[in-house]
Image 1 (cartoon, rainbow, N blue to C red):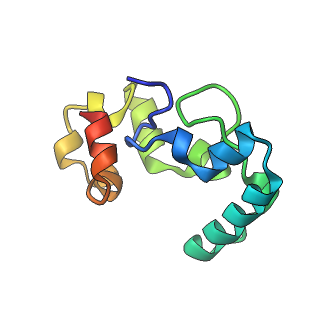
Image 2: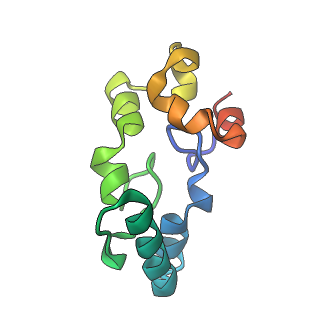
Image 3: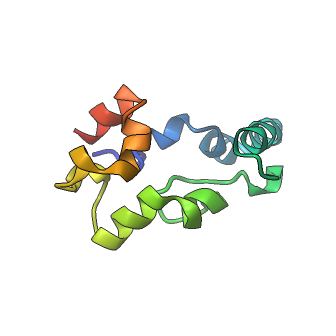
Length: 109
């Protein structure tokens, strides 16, 4: 599996935080911070929009690094992704993503 597929199956290479980081795009950081702040009802600054992928060493957003329940579970269980977990099909945690995103589900299978 490609290293840039997140634990949940999302493609980190398509994430605005990743794109802003690898392209050093401050305008995209600002846009992403505004959107994510609005969507999550929290204050997110452009300075917090830095991520090199949730399964790689390096920068991560605060959410991906320490708040994402999917990532925390997979790391705790020592799974490469949720696709490696025998409980994936019944897991309520990852279902938040794969229940709404067929590409993420395909990436895990």
